[in-house]
Length: 233
Image 1 (cartoon, rainbow, N blue to C red):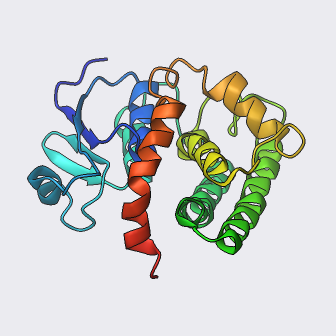
Image 2 (image 1 turned 90 degrees about the vertical axis):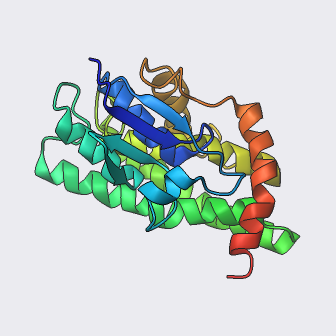
């Protein structure tokens, strides 16, 4: 399904941009990917498209920008209604998925940032403790929502899988930075099985995932930027 009027402004390591790319690939929408290097000052294009937040991703469709990763995912699902659907058709399941996406955005992502910028041993221990609780909640959510199937939403990738999947790799990066073990067969067997046996091998996902070693190298470069932005808050 070709769409010559679809563009996406993003950056290869960005989990937020990856959310949008996953939705486009899942719907078989062709698009132009415009790289915005987050290690450099924001481009004039990004400032023009998203003056409100000055962030990626930005989806451009028929010349109009759509911002915020999950808003973009929902937009893609509505504009290209061909199968597979991203949002659940059942109202209760949609509500559950949105609640857990909010949990990821409000709890997991800030905890990951703290895990990346922690410098003292006490700060690292506190960050890992927070992440252990958050990841544990997501392990329990997967057990409940998957009902024994391959993904959070059932037999195919859905809204919650797309929201969480790009951040699974960042949990591994934080593990490496802090010499921790947030993900293990003992503590998170369902999440590991979901990631390595279902999500990462899916046709819409496998060619988009950043190389883990390159992602860790990028995180080293990103860390001082995050420290300058968040450490004093």
